[in-house]
Image 1 (cartoon, helix red, strand yellow):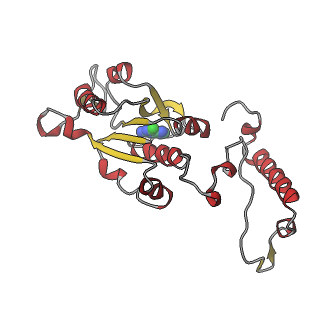
Image 2: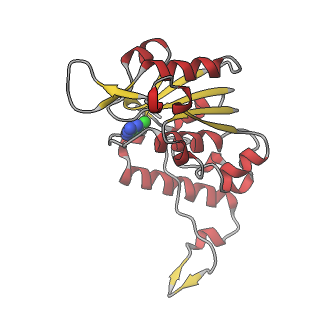
Image 3: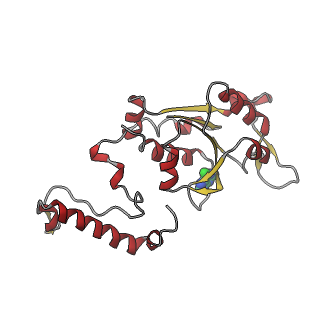
Length: 228
Ligand code: 6GU
């Protein structure tokens, strides 16, 4: 999969994909991430990419032209399955959407800044708008990093048995169960006997029960199965 990201702060997106599972995905050639500096696509003086909004009001708006230049230049060599604008008023990002996006070949992510981007970009170029939650970030970059991470780790071959996505929280609308490792006892706090029993059917049942309990306690909304 190839993910291109247009940003006015490309430096913010250097480190997130250079470690751990994201690094492995890239090293294995399963994921390619390219960060494009929007300022390299503007024809305005001093690499300007934003301007005052018509109608007045505080806050700058990202201009149409630099974004169109960037998108059209990228499109010459890549056919995007989705052109995604990251914005607090987009569809809330959930595991189900991560699963769907992981099936695509090429994604273009556009990080907004300031008061947002000129609506004409949204009307004519954007195919999907995503928010990562009900709070406001100063730009779309951290949201882009979240999406690339959650999608990238789902690509076939990225995770191994130890890190399998099948047992993740949310994958079946349940939170993951508690986990333990050595030592068996620490300060008198013991690992549940069932996990030491070697009875895998019973262990699976216990884990499932724990998942349901934890979900009922912490996220009862997931059990009503209205989304995912
Ligand atoms: Cl995608 N962008 C910004 N700026 N803020 C957000 C967001 C995105 N998702 C949640 N808050």
